[in-house]
Amino acid sequence: MKYTDNYRLKGLRKKLVETVRSKGIKDERILEAIENIPRHYFIDPEFAEWAYKDTAFPIEAGQTISQPYTVAFQTELLEIQPKDKVLEIGTGSGYQAAVLSYLGAKVYTIERQEKLFYKTTKFLEDIGFGTIRTFHGDGYLGLPIYAPFDKIIVTAGASEIPQELVKQLKPGGIMVIPYGSGDIKDMVKLIRLDDDNVQIEKHGKFSFVPFVKGVNKDK
Ligand code: SAH
Image (cartoon, rainbow, N blue to C red; front, top):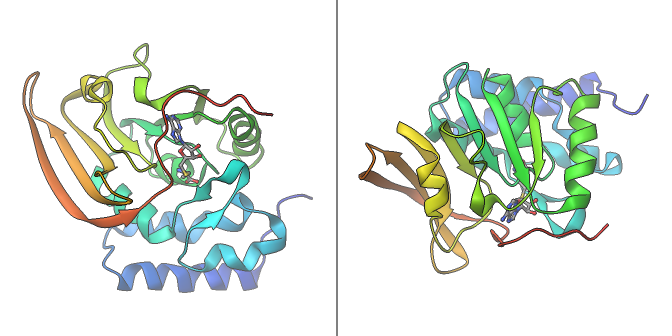
């Protein structure tokens, strides 16, 4: 069996939940997702224990699985309701997508690295998250065919707010995007009020791998 869980790892997961809670996450459904989704499946099995430290960790193609606190924080800002149609930019390991799916969202996720796209698509099916729809493409363009979305989450650090993505939000929809000119980004929550107006809030500083235009087909 490729994916196995055990009591020790479950115990570490409970501790991780307490760490994330102590940093200010209040939504019990998100904490339950962290407790129930084996994060060690999403990284190299040799490093299983590392999955339960509250840190980002390297995955393939020079990318990272986001820090659990950051995943919880971005998810909380999205105010997910069951059945929300959510677009994620930056599939990476698939962990953030799995958390959104656990909360009952209909998840669409785009990854620019072809290798990671294939690997994560199969992996999500293997661990029971096959309803997540994965796409290989450039997240700057979003998924116009499937728009509009209730929520959009960008999991790479942006130096501009893609207007294509704003257009793909429903009125009243929320986009959470780490945004800024330097390496450290402001966690921006953008609410599309109506066709022409958005409201912008900033929620602290975070660092992310860069949001890069275009696709990468390296195998
Ligand atoms: N959500 C992921 C975090 C992965 S790191 C997780 O939970 O593991 C961010 C990811 O964004 C990387 O995999 C990177 O390749 C991807 N990315 C960067 N720019 C992108 C773009 N323009 N379109 C789609 N994905 C992009």
